[in-house]
Image 1 (cartoon, rainbow over the protein chains, first blue to last red):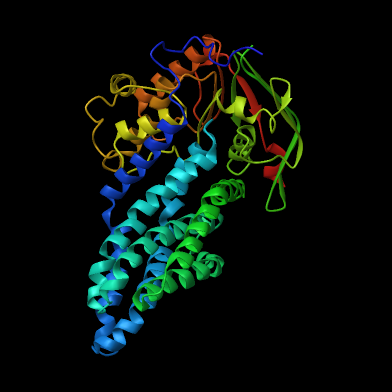
Image 2: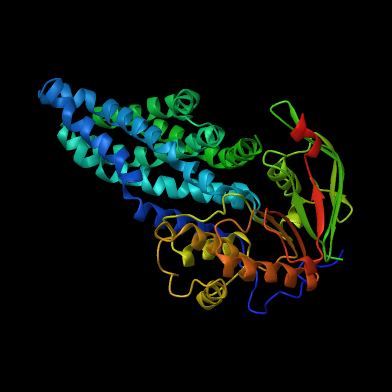
Length: 241
Length: 212
């Protein structure tokens, strides 16, 4: 079989760059887009912050009551904020044809999807974990739970991003896939929510957090191993239809 | 031979409507194939089938003698596809768009190479503006800069002349012919009429279905 690069137009300066460099470029691209379209990633964070700010006003400013609610509330709002951000994950790429270019790239699509999801996590999960101590303060979260909350959010939100990207890829070709997307992936988020909030509660109570954290890590490992292939498959189905 | 894309008995259905039926085609080195037909006759669907995005409902596609589904990795290193939506992200600059395209194509290009490609398509001085601030024709030119930047033997282009001005149309026509003469292959859909001397192959779709 003849080598593919024997056309007259081939320039001498062009050399293969490898998968890792492509993934780095993909992440940089997503971050550059996010920098110029700020509202897309700030909106979910703002939503979470607003709910947390309004909650004590609506329920009761009683610190003891808020402290019991805090772990669950922080996790539920984080989950909903990720859900909010998911619909936009592949939407603009689908609309402007960039997704087609990704699908036709000689690079393995699961790796590109993983890079894209990693950028999504950098823009939602990581800032969420970083502002969590502040939001915890608003809810009188006991100081013992703060470190666990941040670590659990970092692990859990990465799982959210990976699983959510599968749903986003499946619904990207539907004109209003947002509702379907939420219904589709919510069941898969529930274990993460339970163990995430459980880890924070255990830390506050002074119990060991190894078991729930290990489960969060296991769920993330499973998602990293499987989700990129599911995302790639779902994207191919969406574009084919 | 670097390009050998063969389709036999291709059929395509969309929403239970038969768009194509029993279509044969051969794309080899030096082919410049123009797919013609009225709106809705399946031109874009045919291009999507040829790029492997859409599975034909009947018939076979093969690349260098192997079924396309099995030769996919090899096929994608030979293919440059510009779709109906050209794949230019409006919030990225021309430079960023092309750097990403080159990365997807597994090419290591420096800024100078991208600038040179942009200069060829007449976007010198616009390389650091977000594509959203450019006109539709200029965005199309960003997409066309890939033809300069990414050397691939087979080009599949969906309406590449859309939104281009007269100078752009003349340039692209020359570029396509030059690629063909250099041994490359081009498959495109367009309503643009090539110069009569260009001597291109034509494939007419949908004459019967349009009446049905």
